[in-house]
Length: 381
Image 1 (tube, rainbow, N blue to C red):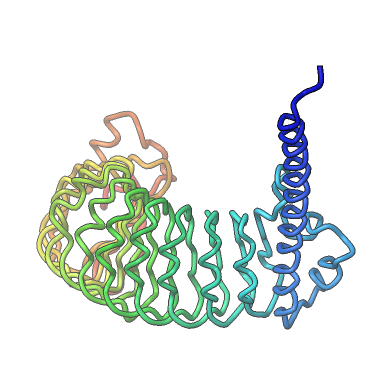
Image 2 (image 1 turned 180 degrees about the vertical axis):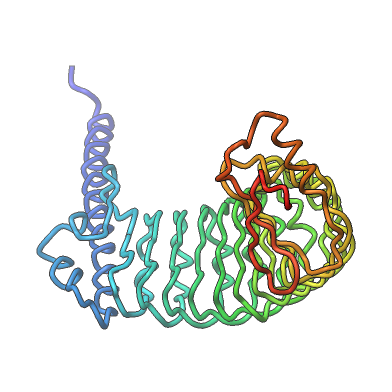
């Protein structure tokens, strides 16, 4: 029996729709990969020095974008998802067209000589997870639009010439795990909003000599933090006495060459994963907490050039002598009371461990900070 006309029309319409949809998707796919190619060729055009001709000889319209050096494509969509031009000695700028790489997930331009500012069009890189521009010559302020990249996990802008202040909008990137802004020309305070980065593991702001003010207390509430490095800035104020209450996995606390005051937090022993503490060249006062000796994983302790005083407990010294390799212990200039090192040697020896003469404990005292090797079996200690 012949089907009614309206059914025929509906069937024909559906077929035509499918043909049109498939054609549209094919055109869209072609347009998208063409867009990626155009964006990358625009970047190539902005390269003023390519000493090894890595892009000049490889990035050509006669070959597939996905076969270009430094390019990784998604096999499912045939879109550019990663660009890695690390250490290619390239000089140039980033063009606005670069923001059209809408499928880009990883961007590595580190160890080159890129310069200029970051174009606002990069805000369209909504899938970006790794943004590594370290060791270039980028200029201008760190853009506030970086806070609009919803999937960013690693942001490294270290070793550039960025100026201005740290944008508070960075605190919006709650997916961020590593933030490196060291060795730029940044100034002003550390934004309180950085404390909103609840997944942050590494925070490195060292070498921005005009960053000042106090360390926001909210930073010490980021329980995922493993490394804090604020060395060579102008930070003032004191460290919260309970700072280790919410830092269970902190491994490195590096804040030398600042203007910190007050005493060493008594809660340090609660940061049980600490491997390294650097607080030298500050204005710290008071006694060294004896419970630092409970940090069984601690490898290096640098406290010299402060105004610390008091007695170092035997337990602290035991911690350092239980290492599998020589330790580094640098303390303050006097007044530090003497400690019975000979008693320490006898106690360590009685445990049946550390009985090799080659094991040495290094101690720095006084203003010259001279290393003095101490042998476990030297009765003159």
